[in-house]
Length: 248
Figure 1: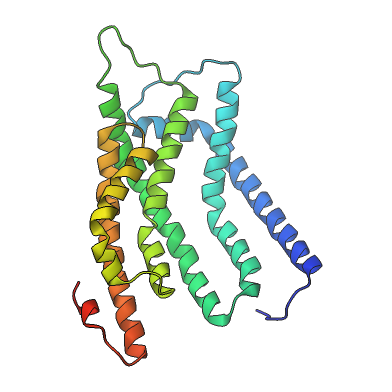
Figure 2: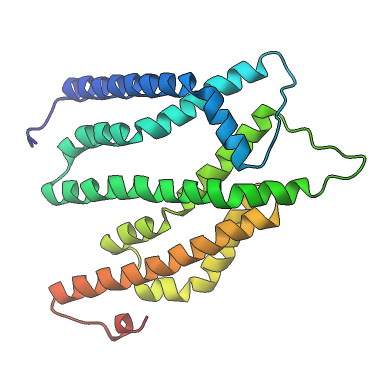
């Protein structure tokens, strides 16, 4: 990759080209998702334990179908999107910064997929079952397509983002912003913060909140361990070793 600096016009032209590539890729993957939209809807409803969904306005089914197709298309095109971002941003980065970006992009995508899969296959069925348990003899659940897709989207996004925590801690450790001591001292505040974030990001049921908070707490502890490893490596390179770092 060339390190030759580009002019403002060249940067704008390059940005435009990458955006066009991304939009075309999303259009193709969204079109493919739309071709299988019946199977996709059947799959997500079956996973959630929902037998039938309804729509309460003439346009709801149409717009939700388009939205769901685009969302699935974006997820499917994400590797290509990350590659285009890399091609654009990488020009302005130094060699060692490019090396980090090459690793961070795929790992970030993988962690998001793991979090999303955990939400979809593990938390969603239990969360739906818990919420529907509040129905009574004179209270019948009538779930709309739009409400269910929005519920699913929020849950998957929340879990996907929260599973990025080890990567965020790794980045902050590399930059020297956080240390093992900082993370250990802030553990009790992190626990409270994680449960608050779980309450905000997940649907309002205790099961979903606990099932988000528990793995994120594990991610935090993994992040502490990663921070220790990174800090030890940095201090070895500097020819010094901090006693505090040796205690995990």
